[in-house]
Image 1 (cartoon, rainbow, N blue to C red):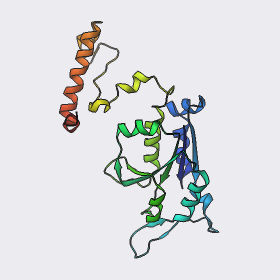
Image 2 (cartoon, rainbow, N blue to C red; image 1 turned 45 degrees about the horizontal axis):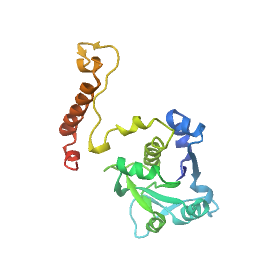
Image 3 (cartoon, helix red, strand yellow; image 1 turned 135 degrees about the vertical axis):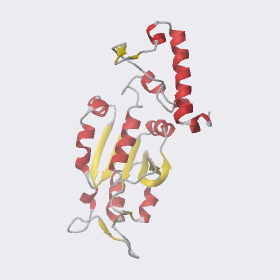
Length: 222
């Protein structure tokens, strides 16, 4: 898979790409991730990418020219262009699975007050990672990238993500490690029993219980 990210703050991605699972996936050549500075595509002599919006209002608006030219430069027949915006469809684990099967993703990070409405015509989809507003789409694009890359074959074991929260519309069950007793809080005896059937039943029940308590809306979808 190839992922291209369009942003006006490319240095924000330095740490993200050089740590943990993303770093290992890159080193194994399981994914290619490129971060493009939108300013490099600006035809303005000062490399401006934003301006005041027509009709007045607060904040600056990203102009279409640099973003259109950037997408034109990197888009292929296999590309799926995604716009990061709080006005997009809510991001779900099921969408992460869908995107992990794509060959090429282009993520456009908005910033400032927003982006020229005509930029929407470039996008195959618009995604929101939550009902709140960030200063830009950079963090959202990292969320999308991380959630997708971990699902690519070979990045992590399949069992590690098949039992993740939100698969089958359930939250994950509680997990424990050493010590058995920590400040009076003990690991459930069934997890120490070695009885796999009982352990599986315990985890299933705990997953249902946790989902009912914290996200009953998920159970309604089952």
